Length: 278
Image 1 (cartoon, helix red, strand yellow):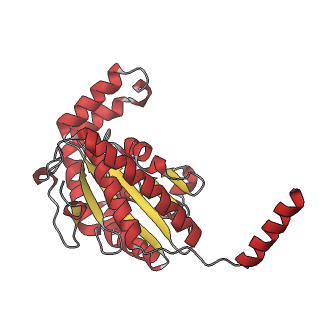
Image 2 (cartoon, rainbow, N blue to C red):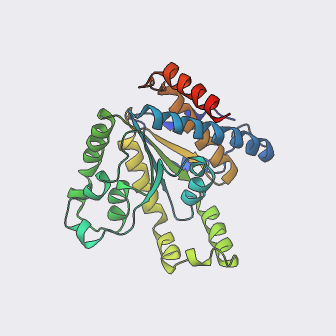
């Protein structure tokens, strides 16, 4: 398959989603082999998360964005689900509450960013404030157009303070979205996910694509890169996201901390206890 960096948006790149194949699977055509590799990758991901927690010097923020039915929940379940929930949490972002609306738009975001040693996954994120806000004219253009620079500054603040940030746009096409809506209609276990707004929002597909293109183009930085992941094929989406996460965490060169006690003394006490128990 294509090397994961093929999907990274380099700073200054102008993204055009219509020119990016949502059904791409690179050189990988074998789903079974991909699932085998995914198993190995998620095991490695759990190991790296444990190392991040043990080192407790840095944190890791994963941002997931997509059109409706784009696969955010599936990515959490099949990839992020391999992590220990004690130290990895998923933070959804719904319509702002009254309290949240009384603050600046980044207030509710900053307070749920990861502490040292922690992983946090944003299921939707602060980018909603340059996406849905823009598409539906919820605030004037002169306000939301300033937010790209504010978001970049916010993410740089996090990065400067030890938070590694990686952002995924799960790219599906309009036909695939409709097929997934149909699956939800026919599956009683997924019907609860359906709302009339899902279909209503499809009327704004092109507007959302433009909004995503602007957000990704303006906010993919060295500190917080965007990846556009072909996501029509769920197995390929999971494989690529897992590869990128593992590669990113390995590049952090994390180390287990040195013990704060005498291992030899603890070992001596252990042997004494063993002898006394006989």
